[in-house]
Length: 379
Image (tube, rainbow, N blue to C red):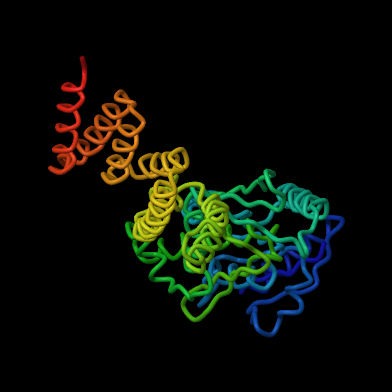
């Protein structure tokens, strides 16, 4: 393994180098009291591990770490600190590997063994070069290279996952650090909030390391930008197809059915993120509009079975949709299925009562009239 050491104390650098020299399978290829990222890009691309002092004069070790990982997301960063209490506070989520000064040889060997294991795992993992990564965000986040075979993603914290999803939500757009803190760590004071941000960025980079051919997380002035390549996002693919589709007809309806299959649930519906709700609502309305078009088209064509399927789908995803319930009631009345008419009315009534809303007068009037006619027609 190749390592570089960063510490603003030359004596500490020399001591750590001597300790590392006692360990096999590692060579120190650089020592810095002031690491200038822009001048050492080539070196950082080649090394396996960076030992980094977290408390250096005028330098935020956490921020420096995420800048290093932007250049080489696969390397390991080991923080070195003289203060145990500080380490416990800074790494309360156990986010980073760290060792305490003075560096003990036994502790150092354990750390390096873990790094070696990680490097072996990376070598054994198949590369995804030229493969298309399918990113599903309907219902919940999943990655696929092959259909029906989920790529396992281990997020160190829920905040790291939410950070990734927020950046993916704004893919291709620079997001300021202050915005991320307002969204994710508003309850923390500024110093701790920034530490949490760098912590999460670190883990997003590490988690995405396996998918380096598909994601690029870059630092920009006072912010970050997530770029995707060789990747398809299901909800975007669905929306693009729907928006570009011609009007529904006998010739195009099968294409609509195929496109609507891509929408397997509401946008990130398994996550209670407030920032998701406006986009989730917009996409649900778009889906509902197209679902109504399909249901009404089938109804007009006399294909009542297919019409029923789409009205039921609307009622399932949006139980408060009166028009879908009403259409089913009228469809069941045509089919002479009185029990299902009653059932659908009760379903609508219950769904609206949960929202403290009453059934619309025109639907109540229709239902009452239908009941009267049903009673009159009985012998």
